[in-house]
Length: 417
Image (cartoon, rainbow, N blue to C red):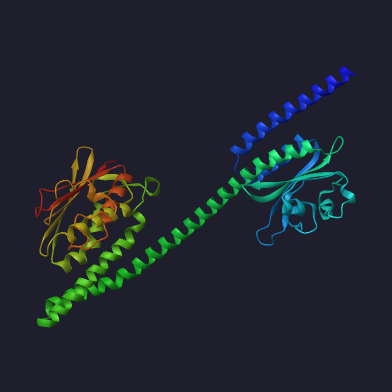
């Protein structure tokens, strides 16, 4: 008798060691898996293995109907089971969920709460069942079931084992759901961002043409009209210039986070984006009565560039120069070879840059002038976009100034091809 008892105790110890090691393995796996379908299938296989049952299933709550549904079941296509709602009232799983307590039913056929529609799909006749609620903090989120004990009947220790697995599984399922919700939200955000970008690009493009006509006629009226009419024309011209500045901001918003992956690089002459930028600002230069002197190296200087993006950066530099240069002032745009680099320099005769501001002026939304007293319009985005585009090309940009009212020079340096 003593030998028999010793053998039973050794068997019990072996089973206990197996269960604890398996539970540890389950814990590690659940904490490292966030793909929901794989996670559910792993829980099914582990549960059946741990309590020596023929199968297992997880039921979760349908957010719309508030009934339970089979999220996963051993050896069955979950998509088929999902279409079978398990009523919260009058079912075994519903009882476990609503009353937040485990159940053992070793004679399922005699229990009126047994939901037989599932057997028709799974072709697995349920003889015995153990079920526990799956809790996330104080909230029940589902039910974990083990079906058909292989040897003997389900016992209290099976419920204890199921309870441990259910607790770990609830946390893992909640984490996977949160991740899926985050991915979906991120995708929606990306979609909205693309829609916003498309709208801004179309709107700014559509506004450019009529605004160019307004600028041209306003400048013409200002020159030809006299007295009060000339003053009215100048007001129209100034408002049109301000609107043009806002359109530039709209156009450039999407360039704030430009990176090297967004560039379509080709070996091209740097003269190309310079000429494009020059034509972009020609109307404004004329309207403000300023002069733009362009000095280009006779030899084509070629570099790996995204011409439209680089043209955008140069347009921003020129707009910045115009904003801080008085009427009848002078702006120089120069391209020159400097060793193995091409330097594009924009020099103005404007208000200059105070000492200590040379780095900060490239920060987003930063403006040297106080927002309450400043005289020059702008959102503080242009130079930050210039820096982003230059660095995305593998280049650099910097500013120089002799001080207040001494003008400023901005240089973009790019490696030549």
